[in-house]
Image (cartoon, rainbow, N blue to C red):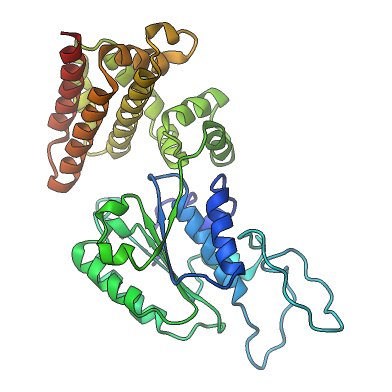
Length: 390
């Protein structure tokens, strides 16, 4: 895929380290060491937790493992692609050590080529960038998907692996998914499809059945803060902690909160939630007007994130039996969520969360008026809180 002039400094192909997901990495390394590397991995989990970063980490590992000197040319010494500085050649052939991680040397040729989108044996399939609208298009097209089969059946440049990363497979339209299925049904040797999925339940059963599933979990708050410290070192520790707390274990969501003034928006939303079941109509209208602007896409995403986090925390608090008394000293978010927890049973908050998520999905799929969607979501919260108090 060609580069655009958008800032993609945080793109997963440029991120070498991986915070968390140790069990998932151990599972992949074990499959490799036992000679049972599947041709397709379905890497699942919530958005923003590092699934694509994991996919690129695995891609570098496979590409580095398959590197071979070009015939007729002397090998150029460089840092070992997998295990540090090269050791002197032994007098007798020795078995290669079994890797213990997916680490690839940061100074290797593979690392540089993947970061620059220039590795001939690595194909990334993602939603294309719409230069006119300055946003990603809504789906992966069938033309993009058809190129996967052609790519996989080419001879690898170094005689090693060919790797396809689809980010995300649940963003393919039906025709694109059917084209992908053909590639999954007839995989060539030493080829790997790494399919990132935010919502694997939306996928064709025939796609899921041809992949080994690898479930990644949200990160702990301290892990999210560690990612933010590396990615957003200029943000204050307090802002990083607040973003991590509201992220639901997703570093990507936490970064979005920091980059889009989402923390200030979070304060406004929490102020509305703190007054439920009474809904401040003027404040609600002002919030809806702001989120409906054409240039407020990042704020819209932050609104969804904050609501989802608040409802999840309210349900969790209600299950634990904690009420408003548990809130002091834990910040505005904890106070608002504890108050919500006291107003309704966990099942009601979970039902409200599901209804609101459906509204957001309809807004995406049908291009609904965002102002009306915001007002409707707030009405759902009001009715949930008021109905339980009656």
